Length: 334
Image (cartoon, rainbow, N blue to C red; front, side, top):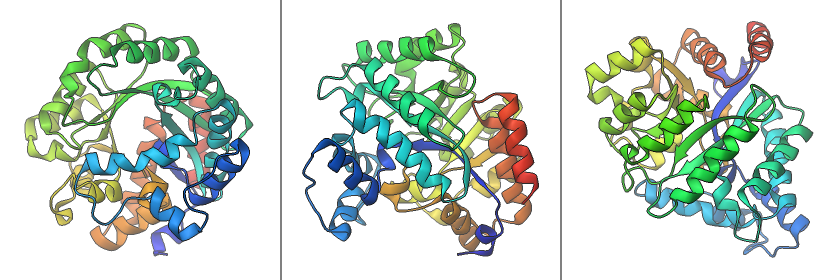
């Protein structure tokens, strides 16, 4: 791999979707555990079903890739084991801390309640050896207000500073269901002192980011369109809001028309608090080490910038100060 990857003593992934992290190996283990017949036994064919095709045109196409992995995450055993297996998998890839996000409302197809799903995910989290936390996703949609309110309730009930549920998110088809539609929902989250991040500026424009900022998000998922509005960029910088950037995913979803203009390094140079993440490592067929290597090879990411990204990730993490001190010590050894 690239030099920048070989020299690294640890990575931090803050934007990692559980259902987008189900590799063929993990899928086979989950299928065996639940006595589910997979649509393909061959690893190559299975990987093709679990990952984004070259024909992907946009985020909506990308989201279609979640159907198969989600079918394996509809029981307590499957969900718990998935969290455990994903965390152990990325630990072997030199990830030293991660935040897994998932939408409890998407795991109720076989009778689990949202609370069942949260409890199952917590069991998997507590079995894993990698320091990690969970983020609960509310979903953009036309008729799921009740489900989002339940996710909010569960985030409040299970909220901890480390070792469990630590934040909320808003995910889904951003262009179809604008961020402004969820202002009231996240006002309640803010009132309940629940930290939150919001997907914004990925499939929609700067207005989406502006609403996320006004709603009180401490982190923005993606935010690639922020460069189109200098005044908003300045506001994000002044507020110290973190950006969770995922270049490979953004390339695949066509979130940015021309990747030569990918703004990660520009954002760093502008003093924004940028982090680098995988988004959906199995669907995108990447590791976080490869994401750093990609940024070095294609965009000239420097060692100093790499260290800044990792330092930003520690600061941005939804975790306690003790864990952050541990992460800083580990990164200082690199």
